[in-house]
Image (tube, rainbow, N blue to C red):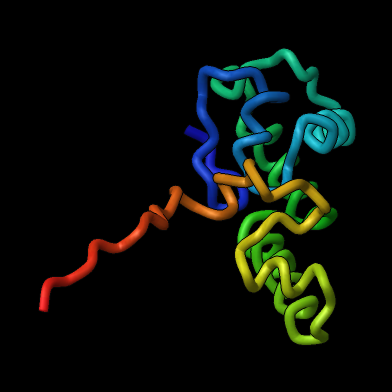
Length: 125
């Protein structure tokens, strides 16, 4: 299993797909990386030479923000929005959808499981 940017890349997958296991690398970025490294996208990771893996590793380290750095940047962006008190920051803070989606019926992923708000039974005196 090749290790790139601190992530174990699956050996049996095509290089184009395998690189997407790295946080911050999608299909388009993966294709660009392989193009710069002059590696065909359909080659499997197990068939790549150590030099090819090293070339991909160096391209990612030099030109792309991935894994920990990318996660940190995303969190800092959210924190900045919260600190300046913007509408988007408030939505992040409250755990609600940020991009204008409806919340009356949907948004369960963001809001979490349903909370039961039934009537309380009267206590006897």
